Length: 544
Image (cartoon, rainbow, N blue to C red; front, side, top):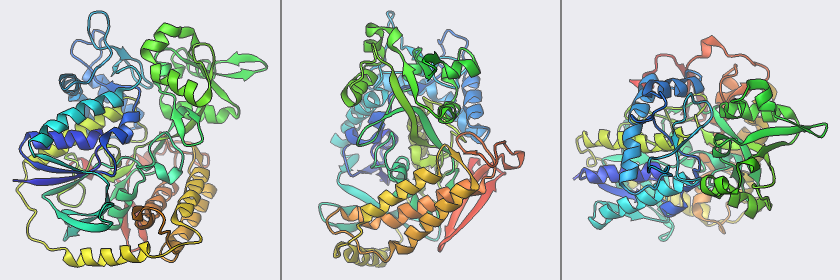
């Protein structure tokens, strides 16, 4: 029987696990924490689909066109068409396994408007869509756990892939309970570790998603793609721990952005873009707020208590709990924050990387969103990508046997023991905090050559000391061994941003404010012993 390892148990990882198990494949599902603590539960707004009975003239082709337009023509047409075509079946599947979508008086799922879309096509579960989908998939996964087809292991972290001659045979895993490494062999390794939030410190996402897996695989020969495209969500509020997302659902339900001008409200998005200005794509709205140079506010109080209670309860609760704001009567002070990473591990249409039997799915993979993601497409892509990878693995011959990685395991274990047996005046978490400061300062909403050069210089310094600092034995060993992979990924991100000398989607350079036709292709970056090589995928080789 085939065996696959899935790293990450959010929506993408769980859906892939369930589909594999449903087809008789043995799944080992690894994560440091339960699925209920994954970033997926934070997804608030909804999931896009064009249903056959939409009644508003929407079509799958319109969904495809909106996605490609938002992505500034860097999303693959074949990939996006597959994603949008499958969306209706995904909504029906989610309903069937227990996702409780909001419905109208006739019992039909309700839709809301999201930015950059030509039609209302975002289906939702109040303002907790991700949480509902996670709950449904957890129950579905448990059915296969009971049958022995899915095995969950918690408190486990990815260390590295077992790769030889361009083929992946499994992974080295750090088991926190055993305080050691373990080699696990499989027919396929699937990475579902989310985005790169920890590179920027406080974001709207989970710090569990730190980008280490992508960085480590990059060092092992895996190509990365479009790293410069980082989506800033235009409406967040800051707390002591993180940036709390004020879902696009607020604007989808009619919420209005404004600023104060001489004591008078100025609805700046509507003034510049017309009645639909509040629902422009996220890159546009974030830049407009940035360019204000003053506080922006979001008002939805006019919706009334009943509508807010039925459609925006989590937004209401977040504002009350963390900021003491009653959104039924008060406005919300908002600011843009890092939210989503369009770039990540480069994958083919089947979600396999340039390494045989190594796959990436969900936000850690770069495939559908191009230079800017439509709200509502992330949950869709998470579920669809897990399905695509599972189906491809199903058609493969078993290949887990044939290689022995004992020597690699022993070497890694020795290196890990050395890091665990030290203490540090400057602990690893201090370096990670400095990295976050560098990334926020030099890779913000608006960039230029000077800031990006400074970012590269800073990250190079952190890399130069990464192998020489004494590590902190008081923190989980994962935080010690993951540092160099995270720093290497950060260096790749800033390098890609520096090389793309144009403005496109979420990548805006004040020194190159226009789009350049010669750069109408994806950025690919590879690593070779400390060297970063950037090229542009004009032939769309990752769509073949």
